[in-house]
Length: 426
Image (cartoon, rainbow, N blue to C red; front, side, top):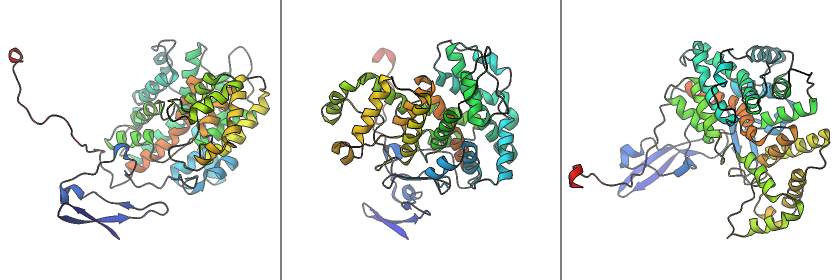
């Protein structure tokens, strides 16, 4: 099968590639050589930059698959480390494989002690994402025995280290931002419970992990683990295509995720709820959202990819209500606003017609706030969860023999060639 393209008086046939599911693609690799033209696709929204076996999204049908498994099944039945194993290796682990994987991740959670002094170089009010971006990049200075990307063993060790150490670094970034001492990881706890303890325990008293909260956060990690070729994943792949070490590539992904249009969406949703302030002001903001001439937009509703209901949001809705019920939070005006907005969005014909359903950012922001995380930590938690997806995508790219260094083209609209004029003649 091929696509017939006519450019001026030149006719060319471009091969068509078919995936296992989803739309086919036209391979335009030889278009410039045959026609002298490139394609123009701002944002690459109609361009497949790679072949991948990891994640599949059907936005029209509201489907998200990790290695072929529906996100709903993984989030409700498994745990985060099982999802990590699946994304990295392509199959769900056996009981023995999972026990071994969990053991190896748990035994890699500590970071080099000199990292403690590294943190002291930041201002006390530094944003946790700034701290995380820098500290992840700094891992390559501490673990240069796993930066040779041509060595499969070193790639594996680097992957394990990233998944294991990101929670420790994230918790350290949080503790530093609030002026509390760092808490070392504890090997007797599971991945997510360990992270909660590192965030909320203090040396002067015992900390007991709430299993409902731990399970809810673990589920949030699963839901955020990967999401196809989004901005941060594409950044990791682009950085990796140059041969950069894996720690540098993941640091690039963290930096990209920091953008409010990407990883900061749940923080933006919570800020919107704070702007609304109280339930009695909701009608005013709903009217503004419906007014095409008003710049106000409801954050946390609808999704660029999902034109139907975000499948992750369905799970997060249930998880949010479980956490709020477990923690007994009843007198929080912000949560009252959120729950009323949710009710309106699921019943108002305007929202239903435009498919502006609450998305995962809407629910995750509420849930993380209820757990005690400040909004500045929301994107850090997103980065923690997404690290395994970035690593899986990076690993797949490195092992793909057809992959070349990323080099997008451009449509130049600047000045034509002109001659230099001496300074005294201008």
